[in-house]
Image (tube, rainbow, N blue to C red):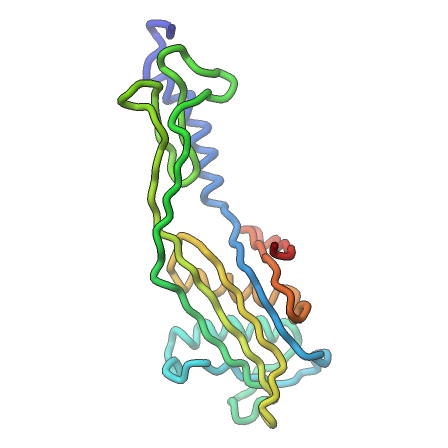
Length: 225
């Protein structure tokens, strides 16, 4: 049995460090994207010029598209290409598109009871329960016990990049990056997707890899299953 002086306040104090650690872990979840790329043998960048244009003509002239196009241009410039003054004078046309779907529901079930670290279960009180995606306090009795069931929305976002030689329209590169996350905010998603797509550019033609980007910009690349 619990000592008479061992109150709910005491239990909360014991749980606080674990809850804080879980919250910090959730805040630092790395961004993950599946990247597929196809390319012909590309010559080493020697200042060839490019222009980023929308795959969907309806986006032409839009401020949102211009913002994301600048992100693509920064990546290509970092690689060694030069941004042209206009599409009419560019050596390469970079066709760019972005998207996020309407989302779908996902249900997650986590245990509602169990031991708490080294303290173990406390007789009829059971233990603290919780899981990522939200912590729930529960006790081993009919009212507080049972699994913690939570529903949330996930979204699939993506970007597509196609690079054509302007003079004859020959396709030089095709690539796409897709991610599943709990955010549908394109201003946050698109830069991460573009970053993933150009990691190790142009990549191995026909290969799909999982790119993981941490908050400190550390990246890992591994083949998908």
